[in-house]
Length: 121
Length: 213
Length: 97
Image (cartoon, each protein chain N blue to C red):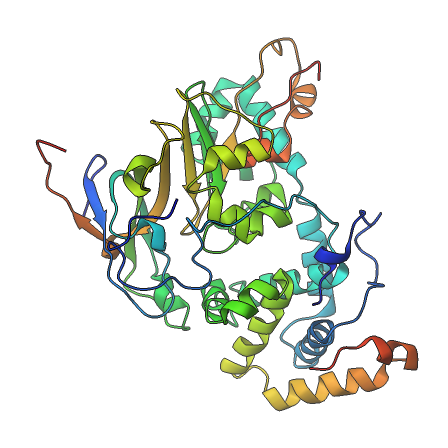
């Protein structure tokens, strides 16, 4: 049941979900993939005070800025790596050009059968 | 649509292996950023490996041990509730650079269930990484306004005279539920008690198991 | 500054940027359970600012019946959240509800 209208003065953020009438909870669990573990580790290291590239609050803020479609459709760790990318650029740790160039180089390194599976941007 | 979460219908036997699923643009992005960060000296490959191992070593078994000890030792329980982070650290669990821990005690008339409606804050240092359902939009949206319906989905029904208290982790505190000790466990040692405590009982979407179950 | 037992209303103002006061609690009245501590302001940390001076954080408890229209699940049910002082407004004790 939604909260009484009139007491809130602005629409919700895409992330601000408490009270929305959503459906059944999918309780299926899967073991974490290496990709997921790496993204997670990267975030923990970058937000650790010894590195301090950005705070975890910044990651949340970046994700909260996604469109509803991005927020709902992007898998959890994809949301993170996309945000990490933006924050590293924001903080001048890496540049967009560097990242783009490296992605292209990695794609070029893929074996021919690997290439066929890579989804374009 | 990408995503291992949506493709897997059976558990992978071991998580730490290369993905054999489709390589997506986000996998490439992760690799690119990781390589660049290592090359520019921001991180090392060893840092990443160590962090992965550190995180993988955190499993609900840590929480189960803490609960079992709290059930067995009243003084430990008192210290745990009063100074959770320090008390847990004294057990040898690394609590450096983690948010503060708080312990929520369930009673016969009070049942806690933890959520982060705004993102996915979770006591990772004790329970490991959260399950996908905890991070799901559906859980985050519904547990705060229809907790009993959600608990029923998890197989838990609670009488109306029990206060169901939903705790929304909106700031830097992380919450661990201390479930009630099941009846008939007076003679059990800590190891056997720990086996009765599953992850969901420490989130609040479940309770501790009975010894005969 | 609040003490345990104080009734507070969550400010329902709109604020752009990062905010850790959930929509569903805005405008709601609850009771302070405890003063949690002081913390750098996440609304500023989110933009790489120091977030100083630190702000007081309070654990606030709400009756479900006071948050949702027609909450019929359990009359004793509650929600708790950790909210910053700058999102809380004092509520005078009322003699009648």
